[in-house]
Length: 188
Image 1 (tube, rainbow, N blue to C red):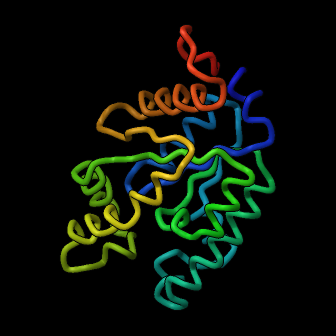
Image 2: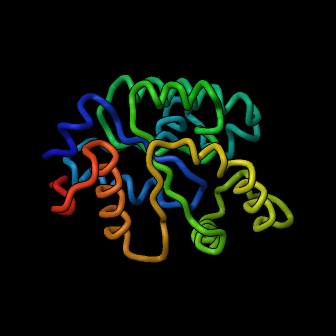
């Protein structure tokens, strides 16, 4: 497995907006690579003994972001793994630095309509509890896309099968870590 060798001790860290598919794609990516999968949001909830909406409501976003950074730092030290992060995690300079130290960041980028279709399926998005969730998402895209653009790799998360997006991630990671090849993905 050329890709696994090229990764060495580093984790693959998925970043992007809510609804980009970080957890779903991450789980399948980990399976394809024979790696552990962790979802930072699930790990934060387990550490806090509270749901993320409750953490936001009780302690506020700044406190949540501090705990999120601690959990991501711990998980990266435990690597290598495939790690799905929350949408705001990559926005903190210190969290980005920790990810860069121990991982390869992959931005799953999706269009507004794709994101909105996906996030409407679940009502547990604290940042979208607004009068106009679509406008809120648009503002998040404007603020976050320039920062996400600093990720090591960018892959479009679009309305195709999750396995197709996983394959796109494998190909992008292989090209990033091993240079372009004429043989397609040698990740398996």
